[in-house]
Amino acid sequence: MYVIEFQKRGLPHVHFLLIFKTNFKITNSTQVDEIVSFEIPDPKRNPHMHATVIKHMLHGPCGQLNPTNVCMENNHTCKNKYPREYILHTSLGSNSYPLYRRRDDSVTVEVRGSVLDNKWVVPYNPYILAKYDCHINVEICSSVVKYLYKYVYKRHDRVNFTVNKETNEYYVDEISNYQIARWISTPEAIWRIFSFDLFDISPSIVSLQLHIEDAQLVTYNETNDLSEIFLHTLYGIHIRVWSPRKKQNVIGRIVVANLFEGERYFLRVLLNHVKGPKSFQDLRTANNIIILIYREAVFLHGLIGGNNYCEICLNEAITYEMPISLHRVFANVLIFCSPANPRDLWVKFKVYMIEDFLHASMTVCDADIRVLRWINSFLKVFGININDFGLVDFDVIVNDADVLADMILEETTNINALLAAVRYRQLITLTTVSSGVAVSLLPAGRTGHSRFKIPFQVSSDMRYSVSKQSSLGQLLQMTKLIVWDEAPMINRCAFEVLDKILKDITECELPFGGKVVVFGGDFRQVLPVVQRGTKDDIMKASLVFFQIYNNILYNYH
Image 1 (cartoon, rainbow, N blue to C red):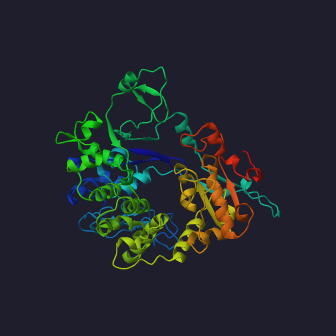
Image 2 (tube, one colour; image 1 turned 45 degrees about the vertical axis):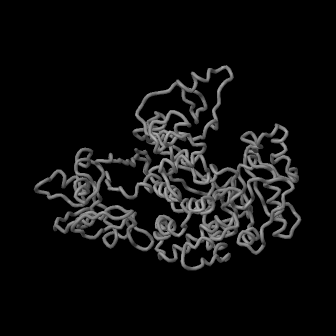
Image 3 (cartoon, rainbow, N blue to C red; image 1 turned 30 degrees about the horizontal axis):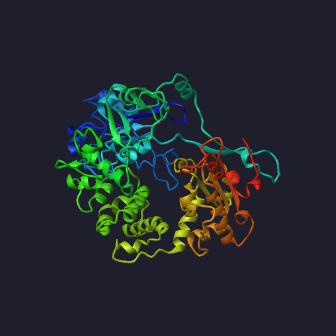
């Protein structure tokens, strides 16, 4: 797979990830040395390769040889960790790049006025370097693929900037002055105009949707012949039309199912292990006996036993989930799956949940406590405490002051164009959205239900409050601005609950307790979903029927 990006100077470069077949996986240091080199070739034995390495694959110089090089960070060290140390033999690390062989062979060259040796060589493949005669950094990344996938598909670089007028006026128009933009260079513009590929993956990955019997959502015309549709056509999720099936080499991956989804999760287990089923009944058949539910069929097939399905779920999650997501998954396992021995799960999988904190130079003990507090924050919504599971030998002190400090840090460290002025003054702003898909569009964004602990099933007559002494209550008291994006998608009762919460916490009868609340969204998009509701029910659930809707100031753009 590859992704084309464009450098600041406008030239294209590619991130290329090659995954070897099972029989060709790299398993020892000798194989690494056959692919990647970190040394300057002998000028007498291979003059062409020697010249090519000097031309393209030497870093810097930086550090003491050139303190002003672009790679130097504030603490006067190279962000790429050059010069490296001499290493006699290559060794494979755990969850890291290998430690490559860099021998002290006394071969030196003069580059940009400095004498460099093997400590300054960027890893390269000799064949590829000689063939293309350009800078191509080659790394062995067999144990860090999860992070590389996310890095390869990262978004383009963007910049926040402000346009200042030569005036002493105190009034600041944030919308006019602050912009978020991305520079499109001439090569990138041409690349896009001619529709050149910006990414590709081979073979293609096809998401296989998962549904229990008679629970698949499809759209078709009343006049269509259903037997013809499902046999010869495929429904495109993105383009939302039926098209003829195509034959090509692809990799099918069944979409993820969580343990708390019950039968859907156990159906996924069966699909991954039972060969050649032709119907849902085949999947529920074990020892020639038709089972009524998938869970029992899974046990009878011997695919999972006792409570080890929790371990299977977490084993799968660690292959692609980041630590913060693993915290949520682990909390869900504790809440919905009632594992027989939660401590065993914690001991086995905690190393994957504390990775981020260890990279921040935190001790293992401190990282454990930090993660346990994060998991507790998810459990607290359901009235459960982390100490109820006995994951460690001591009680985890869940100090509301510490939780509050983490929440404040989260809400003050990210800046968005709309929120720049408030957060620039180190004031608290809460960014929320109505759907989980839109969360990634806002810095430190969370869904409204998650941020304000509002139940999913809300009604106009429900009573719900937040303790003023809780960490959330204290955070709301200090908050100066609340931004709720995609507001028309949410039931108005959620806003009424928020209104009551803020009035109670602030002891102020003004709308939202006198807090500034910004609603974003478009009423032409999806309106609130009311199960089995009529058009009138949907309209009454929308934001326009909120009791203070007429007092809202509008800004259409």
